[in-house]
Image (cartoon, rainbow, N blue to C red; front, side, top):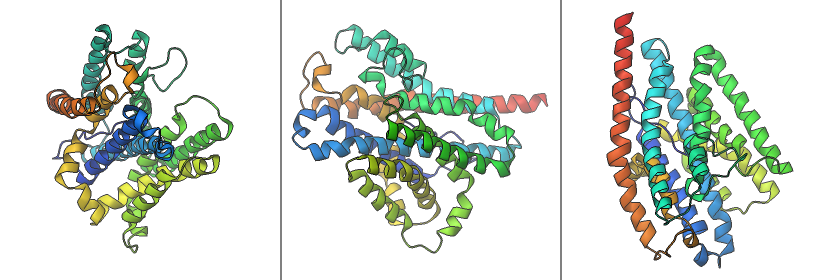
Length: 359
């Protein structure tokens, strides 16, 4: 799942480090899927690597969630500070124009390939994906080629109520509420792991990752002051996350991982954007910026090209699908996602101007 870059530069400068983290996130997902799915036959002789590949993917997704909560909170709080209020209308206009057009194009492509017999996807799965319900396992399952849209479902369900919460709460209570929500969501996630409750999708842990990103944005300054005396804290957190991602999951390590990872990711984001470091320099390099800008299109597209071989009508060659991903994802970004995102911003500004003219 994927995060926002929604506000015009005149209001909020683009944070290049976060684009770098988006690149890291989507590359973790792609690496995990290459090992777990596309080259499964080869890597099944390396069970240790396969055991951690799924952890890479989950770590990438939860980093996406945390970035999303962090960035969108900063944008809305900044809008409130500069405009005097938060506009749900402008928020949802930007959100719809960013998320829906690439998703619709992807689902239409999957439907067309299914109709042509190249892949097989149930129509109800397509419908469930388009309605942002793939994180709910009741009814028909979302099949492989649309199953990854469960992350979009998590985000859209969270943001359905998020602006209203910010509007209704006094600023002093916002951080307290989202810290509490993080604890509650993490508790649900831990209970699911301990007693094997619920569905394969970890809704509690996913909502916790967004909520901790929100809390991090609301408590950023005190955290920066607390870590001001530490040397290389971002690098230390990255090392800890790498170590955690390499540990095969037992019940004990799962509890540690689920508790620590969202908190460490949020702290890592805050520190990497607030001080100069080698980690920040790497995140700001041009290749990472380019991949980060295309992260949503890459995330959507990779599922179509990184499936196990038996899911395709013909057995693709080892390099055929990854090469196709490198071609298709930039096309989706440059011709669909980027222009539609800009169009959404334009409409949001027009609504703002229209509202001002009627006051």
